[in-house]
Length: 436
Ligand code: NI
Image (cartoon, rainbow, N blue to C red; front, side):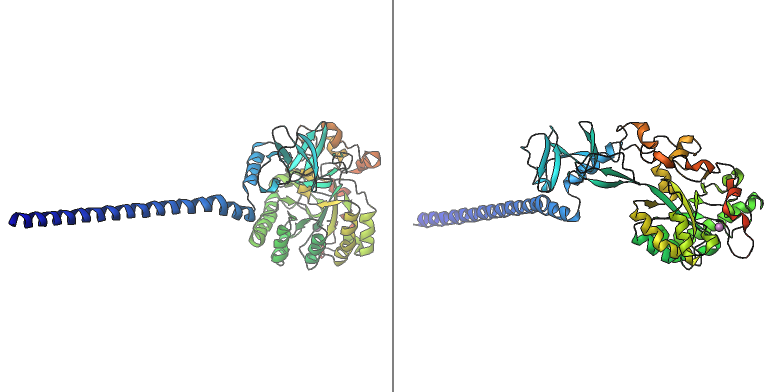
């Protein structure tokens, strides 16, 4: 009896132990399952975020993977104007089907060119079968005026580059300010997509700090015209010259954060010692508006519009005179309407292939460049592509050449041609009625 009861008890105990073990096992399995689910869930979340959400966010933020490809490709190549080979992938290329054959293709957005390696040209110039074309960032053929850097290039209706079409450039320069009319002048420039160069007197800079800041924001050249317009830099001694320009730079840095990058001597009175002391490129002019003398908007207007507006001309005006600014209300839009691009002196130099030196510049005419008298001229001014079309053909300009080419004979080369210029007859010392 006893034995039976004991056996029964033992079996019961064993059953209980086994059940407990089984429960533990089940619990362990449940935990493992849960753990697996958790890991799977986390992985799924990562996958969704990286694969789906990020690309969407990026495409809204403007830096899709394809653009990154383009940027990389661009940094590799030497010519910033040249097109890149864009792979046919990504959201932007849905209309460009990969199965198409190499060559020109048209779709609802325009013409594009497919290469044998399944890429298309985008974002710059590309020569195909001897003709240079321009492709938009989306890879479509562009026509009309295209701006790259400081230069404009013209592409005919069939997309081919037309080297005969050259946008003439002029540099408007304004002396003796800033003054009470300068801000109005900036309004006019801005409204017409134009820029100018301001040769300012240091003593006026602190009076119009916001105006000077605005010049910088608009991309105008910040020029120094000495502190207080002494007569003349050639005779006041080089220490005084240095101080005149150092003080002006300090005033400029104070209001706009940068020193003058270019300079003009009061009365155009300079010599090489003066330039070396100041250490900036000096600018004269090739067209004097005579506004300092006329003080009449109509006369100012006629003097400029009837003057020699050869490509590369530097025009002298004064923003301290109200009639001068009034004249600009018409001069600036009229020049733009006539197809001129109004740029700063440094942009003009860059566009003509000139690396500015501590020298004096009066104009950037093709004839002057060709004569070898322009310091820092690198030759072949505007090659479209580094490899591109013949070097000589463009700088010597088939275009303008016709008549105006040698119009600059009179130019007071180097050496202080200053005397040849307008201001000579000034009398009243009090006001700045000088030629510049
Ligand atoms: Ni002046």
